Amino acid sequence: MSSLELSPQPQPNLRVGLGRVLIVEDEELIRETVALGLAEEGFDILIAEDGLKALDILGGTVAASRVSRPDISLVVLDLMLPGMNGLDLCRLLRHQGIDVPILILSAKGTETDRVVGLEIGADDYLTKPFGMRELVARCRALLRRQHHPVPVEKDNVLKFEDITLYPQECRVFLKDDEINLSPKEFRILELFMTQPRRVWSRDQIIDQVWGHDFMGDNKTVDVHIRWIREKLEEDPSHPTYLKTVRGFGYRLG
Ligand code: CA
Image (cartoon, rainbow, N blue to C red; front, side, top):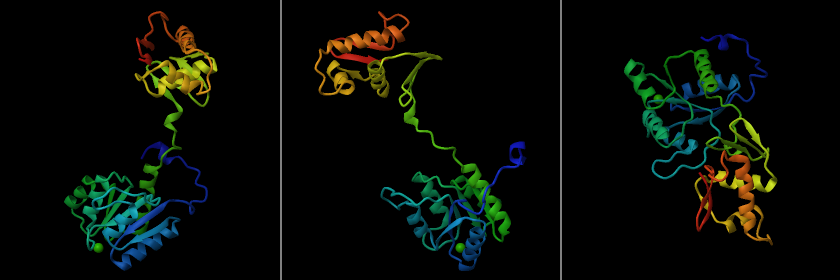
């Protein structure tokens, strides 16, 4: 165990919002025991009595494309199920790109059973009979592993070679140096950086940056491109970023 895991973590109100667990189990007694045990620990519980029902809840399909699934944090999966067994369900979910953590809970406890379970994409394997505390601990561990940081909107940063552009901050960097662009220069560069190597005609650039009611000459674009080059290029008369495509317009890279 790493020192990170040993250090005390602030755990405010552990009993709320731990995650939603789908329990896939055909034996009622085990199902109810697991559901009760996990619910007492603060998990939200969903139940499926067989594999097909679980597949349905998780948004997988036997053949067609998947639909959206409810927000399931973890699946506790029995292997011997009527209809579709747990291994087939697990395999199918992974095949369809459904990457929810899966903990197999099975009476089949040989090493081979465990290895097969893990190899087809389960994240953990617990053999029946099991202790409720161990199940809870393993569920928690899986969710910790799964815990994503706050998602970063990838669209927030545009990168092309040494240029980095932050659309919402209206800032541009060449390596570590900030480049000061006018608002129009910034919009032009942003346009190029959304689709590197795409050729833009002067009229397209005007439409995108100035809008349809632009009254001036499309030579305006050339002037702005020159200004951007002077700020961005090592040798503005031999640009490596904003290149002229004769007869068409300009492109980045
Ligand atoms: Ca069973």
